[in-house]
Length: 85
Image (cartoon, helix red, strand yellow):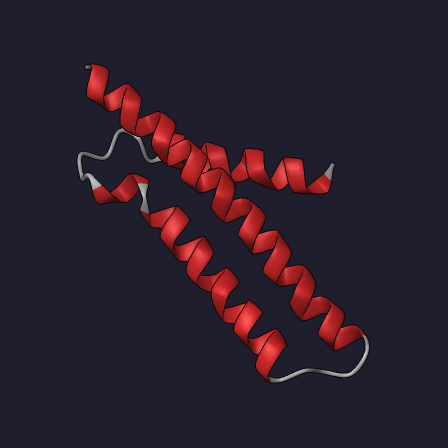
């Protein structure tokens, strides 16, 4: 349930930026969120923590990844909306 909410939040972000005329502004949230997810994933794999810190790094990786996937979905939808105009 929580991951679905994050995917929906990630999907809404490109719609909020839809009125800006730049082509890359719709993809920037997805790039930023997925880049942050990759950084947390590498940090969790290379520098393992003890107990709850390791769990928190893995959870951040999953949360940012879910929001990044939602931003990709939202970017694709906005791309097709702008193409039809």
